[in-house]
Image (cartoon, rainbow, N blue to C red; front, side, top):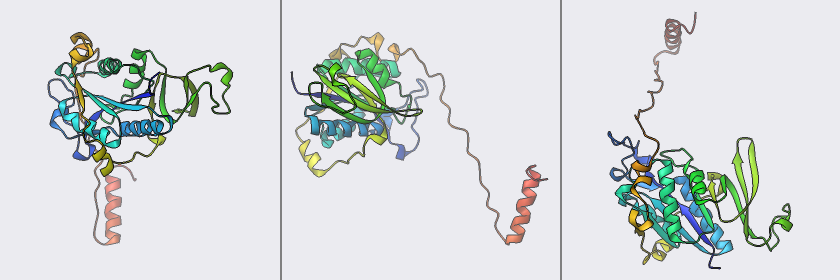
Length: 283
């Protein structure tokens, strides 16, 4: 058995500090190539958790992302954060993918990398916020899934683990005790690996890139794989492989407007009362 292998799925999203994302008027999809892209915040938490697990359990961490060439800085950032390998799935055939086509592409890419033990991802992205890629990817890969993890503990079935667990049923292999958020609070799961977990922002506090991390990432190249490299057929990825279609994109309605009444306090109060009466708020 080789080293423990962790795969982290990350997404390059439009920088929220640079305003609202722009959309292609024809496809109605986000124009990522025309915007400054950053790593999705919840995916940063997933990377941090993968590095924490590697620190205590050993192994290798590989980051995988699907996106245009402009997503390359996000992959380089992951290398500077300390991951061992970064892979960008980039091909015009992947453009316009919905969550299902995205999940299929990621699954093909992950399988191309070979054996894996654990897949992590953020519970949702800041641009789409569907929360669908994690469970869809787990289903395609045929592995267990736990959403919105706030705590992950790994242990070997043959070794002592959490005292609340009956290890007589574990047998050999690696297991995870995962605490995940649910509507009514928290739920604890025992999962045999390989498995896929999406993480909540409560799971950790991501560290930033350090100078040592930048220096340590020198010599590491981001691997780029296209549709042919991962064995993707045109009909199962990108817009052609997407069963859902965006028909229109509309901005949110304008918010409520405020009005400042200045001047003498007594006059300001009288003016406010008159305005409220005119609107039918006061009688």
